[in-house]
Length: 297
Image (cartoon, rainbow, N blue to C red; front, top):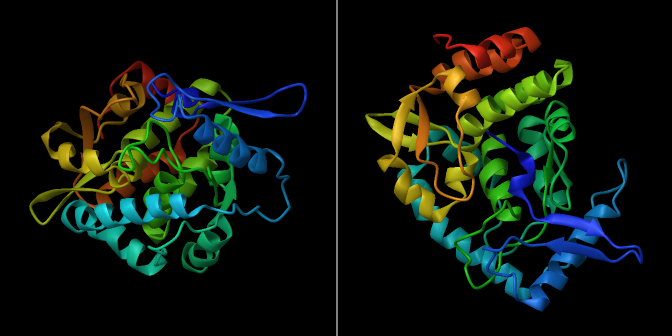
């Protein structure tokens, strides 16, 4: 099941105040000293940020802007082919820049008038309750670093491309934004960590890796699929199951590979009725019952 620590490279601060980013063994930047130093620099900017202060900016290099342009150019035709129309409508309304990496302040300036959401910075991992609690306040924690330039269409961890291209476009849809906010608000009222993890796992198989029927085709709306060049080519060949809260909240999965099992909503209304209503009403008892036994939806 979902363990948030697996999603990000660990960030630590040494006794002398220097920041270290510990990349995974499969990270393409593991042996690139310049990339590791750049990651530490950007993480340090986020670590120094305090709530209530303006979100800090990053002076992106031309190489980093080039990665953004490359990924954007490759993802755009994939979105046209594979993304659900609700996501595409949000993407069109948000109008993210295609020629440069946007600052998180710029993302907020575009997003807030649409759905009331804001972005803030994160060095990497954000504790689960903090991350979801802020979702309940319409605030999304985003990293600011980019993937390694040697593999611009691959990242073993969420970077700004995933969190802005994937989640930002998704949050520009009022309907998807409302479901995400409901997941966050659920975490604020839940008392047990098991219940919060159950909500996070349902979120994983919906807002991160959800698929949906549309006009006789299977489309993607999940941010994890729609920010991944390779995953968009593969998701239709995976095992597709109907929405089932028990399965979504208890299924074991590996975040380092393409998701072999996906859950299909029949429409946005169906997603709202099943997942949205679950987030809006779940309490600790319901999460425990769903974890323990299958409940029809």
